[in-house]
Length: 402
Ligand code: GLY
Image (cartoon, rainbow, N blue to C red; front, top):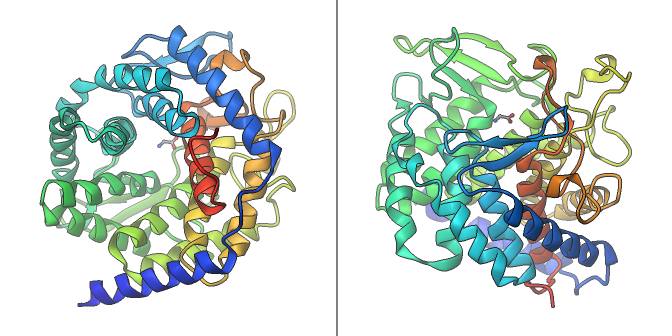
């Protein structure tokens, strides 16, 4: 009953929001020009890389770091090809997307990570959504089962990692993998998957967030008592800092959970996180954050605090979704539009043929590990494409672009 109520409210507010500021297709050149660059880059990448060894980032020596099927980022390149196909209508991209997706079928046997959502839902999930070809389903079914099995009723969360000294580590990034569980719960008639996704999101809401709605990166639970053992960072600047991509994962995660559950608590949480991000005094003018909101004093070898385009792209996705769910949605849509314009400028978007065929420049993987600093990242590209698709839907730009 509660669920139905939320669904009705959500439906009404969606209708109201879209009526409020649905606009005719903008004649904005940046969108059209970006799609043209995207088509060229993705075609170049598909011709350059080998299915099963997907481009992940660029090493400091200028070579491309590739990702085997076990890597958490491996689903993003096939997913980008699928999104590229939707944006451009180029059938060659769909053919390549199929090849790069099917090369990942062994992920169905991977059990030791929570990242099965990123790995499978972005690749096989998009393949299924776009083609409706049932051959993609068995891998998706196995992967979802393995993700579900990582849930503990004692802690109320899905375990993220199996490495390290933690006992039951959960990272804010884990919110992203819930989308796969929600979808699989419906697709494979396993309502327990959606229940677990809801429980994970509620537990995370309780333990991962500070009073200002910024989030910790890692919360470690005691698997026996279910109690929190510690809160810290792994990829941020400090335990108490606000790692930019972590804030982005949280924002995207909670609006996605609202979309899937209709639980208004998730919508409120997304609004709180959005406020933290959008009003942050250290958010740069172009709205592409430094890799950690507290990292203004942590400079790289050239004395700069590098920006993280991947965080910006994920924030844009989250804000675009949020904009369609609330009355004051325009502030979120406008902010996301500014991000997308910045990412589509030559400062961030590659020139055709450059950047090893990645789309975006200037992201950060793990600064304090001296890993992937100021480099292209395949997930920055994936969420940039997803944000462009969401933007097109909001602005009623017909896809594929003609
Ligand atoms: N999920 C790992 C990262 O965001 O870098």
